[in-house]
Amino acid sequence: MAGHSQFKNIMHRKGAQDAKRARMFAKIIREITVSVRNGSPDANANPRLRAALVAARQANMTRDTIERAIKKASGEAGGADYVARRYEGYGPGGVAVIVEALTDNLNRTASDLRTLFSKHGGAMGETNSVAFMFNRLGVIRYPAAAGDTEAMLEAAIEAGAENVESGEGGHEVTCAADDLFAVQSALASRFGEPEEARREWRPATTASVDEEQAASVLKLLDALEDHDDVQTVFANFEVSDAVLAKLSA
Image (cartoon, rainbow, N blue to C red; front, side, top):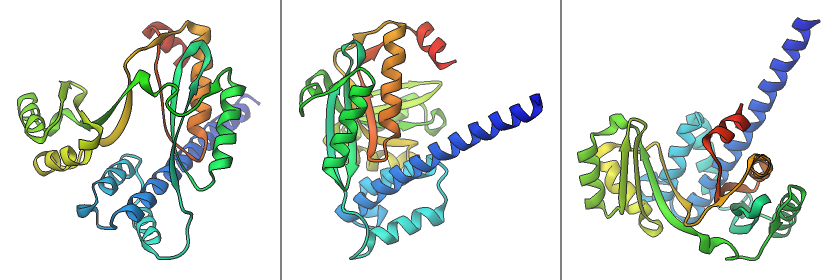
């Protein structure tokens, strides 16, 4: 009986992992679709598409899947017409939350997200209700092996970046959000394609939360990230490493 129970638990975890992987692929394909329709199917001429392809490779998406997504997005007819929208609100403990979505049904997405906020002890607000608590940045990440600290710093400054943080975990280059693709292209010509290149919301102010509030916030963020229309979620909560490790165990 114990072995049977363990097998069921393993299969349940595998099923959950497969479902999460499928959702991730769907989000990346949606970004590829929007990138192609707003630009070009040629990644060399479309920095946003290049960034999406970086995410696809990081997620171990097959080349065939990527090529099908680009081909489908390049067609004149068929496929959903996605619109980018930003949603904002507050979670437990007064934590500010920003949600970025690509949707083909604005009413559905707004209703669903409002319900998720409410269900998990938060409330969705108006546009710009919390954005002022964040800074919008372009972020480019390279593994440490891509180049030494001095070379990365020099290249990033020449490319117009604002800051570089290097360590054993790799290099993180930050720049103005509007400069992301220009900086990405300049660095790629020297170091190759990055591990990640995207725009992020970085908290300018943070909200400290206790263990109970942190658990509720993490449940809200997980629920939001699991929504099919949601691409990225950012929050400004601050919690001790000990509490975070306990909640992640």
